Image (cartoon, rainbow, N blue to C red; front, side):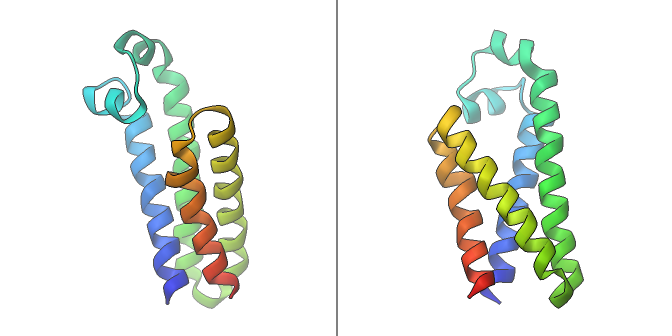
Length: 115
């Protein structure tokens, strides 16, 4: 039950990131969320939308694993590992905040699933 809840939370986080990156990047909300200057946000909006799409795929995979129920454990492990790796890479290369927003929840869900 805890694993299911945590997987759903990670999926919702990534759906929110999708919205921020694909639709709100070039708005005050996007600027604040990612600490962006308006000119930088305008110039990078296509790249951000691409990132948002990938975050949507991560969320879709996690939601698919939940839909599969017991048969979705391997799917959940795969997508949680992808989120964890992406979060670690993002924390190392972009912002330490990503460690807490993305990697830690994925790790918690992965541990809950494996225990």
